[in-house]
Amino acid sequence: MTAPVRITSFGYLHEAAPAAHLTFDLRHHFRDPHVSPELRHMTAHDREVRQAVIGTPGIPALVEAISDAVVAYRHGPAGGQAVDVAVGCAGGRHRAAVVAEAIRTALADEDVAAAVVHRDLDKPVIQR
Image (cartoon, rainbow, N blue to C red; front, side, top):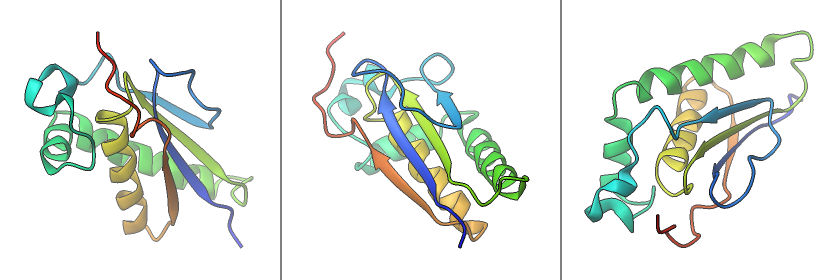
């Protein structure tokens, strides 16, 4: 039996990144939906947030690259071990959570099952 792929979305402003084999920081390279007042109090559960994040230039290519990296790890000499992926943004409610779910979908397309944990998705909006 192949060990699991675990994907954790999180917010750096809540606490440090979780331990992972692959960690991706979305804060500085991709627009934060938090800056849009109409999206600020929404989360990755909301269609508008998902569309805004997935519609961001570079995000689809990043999701594909992360999926490819996970598949590569699983085919390596230690391929029977678990692969942990951490995806972070500022608060963990928008970018990281949407990307984590998109990675799960991309992996499913490769017949790789993955579990997603949203560490900070339901925490209050960080005022900055």
